[in-house]
Length: 576
Image (tube, rainbow, N blue to C red; front, top):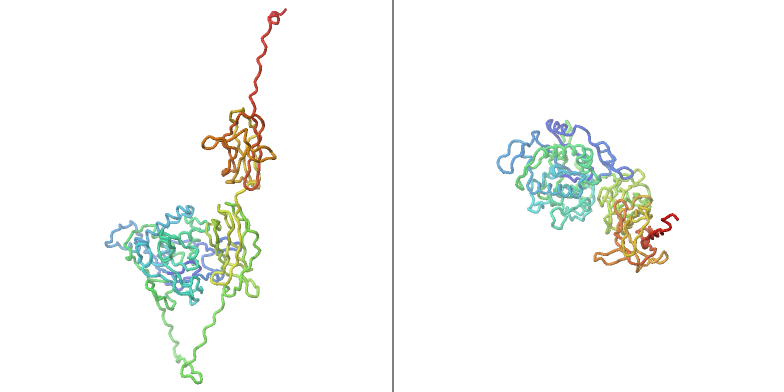
């Protein structure tokens, strides 16, 4: 099992020639890695994490299962019976509740993020690698694991060092974090990625429904389309930036796509090989986790003599305790505070992207820049604004000048102020809060779409509809609120009590229409206009949010009549 969000390196897992051939066949080309450039954009790199990539990934480095699927295909898919499985099909069995959770997560993402094209088999492949399908499906009816599944303590001993971020709420450790649950979320990631997948009102990383849905949303961020191989590779590598991990997940994805079948909960096959099999370290005592296999002891060189026993210090009868090993501080350890790096005012109209982006600088206590530090940007407050890709949290690595630039903010429809909090991942130092504001949709210009005169006879109705186009900075202003009022005069904008009028739902005359909205092209077509018996020239004023105003002239006049020509007199017709 592995703390999957971060950059983890597979350590010393041995594979057979057959297994290596399987991986090679399933991943013939090297996939691009996922990093963040100086502007906070996702970019491609080689799959093997560089030293710089590894340095910023204090999110786990926990082990994962390296078992590979059988070479023979599980097709044809066996039935759901519990009889003897045919050779090679046992691994294709997925515990019923776990399988249901994966499929429900796929259905939810199909509705919420249809462009992602998340296959449930990808969740199954990651679940296999991370926890052996929740330890072979040892879950309750609601999907909660019967015993906790914890990764090792992330104390820097063979893995990254992540100080406690949840006060032990999820992993029971108030000193260091552990990866938690069947999809192996570290607590700081679960804090923002959490979802309620089984509708019980709780977001529990130990519940396969919740964890599978959260993993699906995680894989679908940044607008990735998982039907595209490059985006699929990026998504998997964002779960764990390791070529070996990518190849292992891809092999299981391909295997599950060829056929799977449902088996009873608790009867799934358990994986055996882990990426840390050569690392000797204590494992959590929690039931449901496997202990790492100790590596071989190093042999003593021939002819070597035993090491001398330490001499007790004067006045004591026991050997002296050797000094603790010293460790080189990571870049994160050296950060003393965060500073705003010149972020401009953050304002956007509802539905628009913010033109400015947040920049944060990590510094030591002496004010020096700290590179390769992960900065987490979190949107807080009553808002539906998100970062590009639809998430409310983004993590960016500081560049060589110590600056992290957050992804662009995309305003929702909810107006008002909110904040974006910048914090250092793995540290508890104070963060920096940025205020942002979403204003209502607005227009700065209104024009009629026709130049025909608007005329009507007393008691009649206007034949030409009133239609206007709203723009903002020359671009169509869609979904902008507008009001139309038949006013008394150019100097008196109050509603008139005579002349043209609209009709309400009951057919009564009204002279003010509120709650109007322009369409997607910025167009606004008013309802039918009628005239009472008053002749004259009248004014219709249309106003929008943002201050755009247009006054339209309406004319009510009797129809022109022509007098018949007089009949000619007899003398005129006789020619005399």
